[in-house]
Length: 366
Image (tube, rainbow, N blue to C red):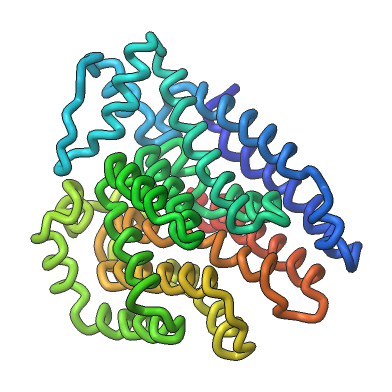
């Protein structure tokens, strides 16, 4: 297949699945009850397997972003023991070393990463939305950043989806497993420290969602007043080995990585918070899991808001955006928000995937 066809084929395949799901919600007033009785997880497992092997065996091409450097780094990797060094992504190196010892070629290596990326998200969705994991997974597949972080930012994407699973175990009260998964995510990509800090703050310190929303709103004012100084401060901390290059003013290679205050990204980031405000403050619905997820999203996205004028700030936006589909889908599945929630869920799903198609086909089109 022509490498440039991979993204449209993926996007329109997901669109078809979303249309089918949305139609069933819109046409059947009790579809959510039927969904609880259906074996839809089997279909989702099959879809994830097919997509993992298809995208894992993609060719190396410029349209796949950093796939080339990942391939060359893997081919240059020596199959030797990797020591645990908390200043480096030791676990990601271990994955490469194990694949080398198994004599995997680079497409096999890519497939292993893709399998981890897809199935860590699926297992997390199964815990967050056990009655309807297929709907939750469709929100994830149709997310704005999903495809990009499968074929381009592979390491970051894998770490963040492992964090989703960590959130599920932590909120379930299984602290040892949750902490182990947090350490695994950190060992794959060090920037996972931000959502790790966010979820523990949400669990033990900022328990009221309205304070998380207030902090997010305050971060906009702070960014407008002192965004440059804050960006330089975080760069000086060595938060990530790429931070200084991401925040350099002369790094501008694409629309997605351009500098300046990103009002478009801010509007996109605000949607889960607007929904959260309506659910938690306007409707006064209480759900401890949703509260923690919403606060974690607010805190981690606030970090991006404060450094959003930097080039490549989307790298830091993703540290909250990977939660975006869960924060949107969770209340639709688990909380009684509207009288005709099935129909509203179908409409929101279509708006969600439609926005992703618009951004990829129209907004970022050359």
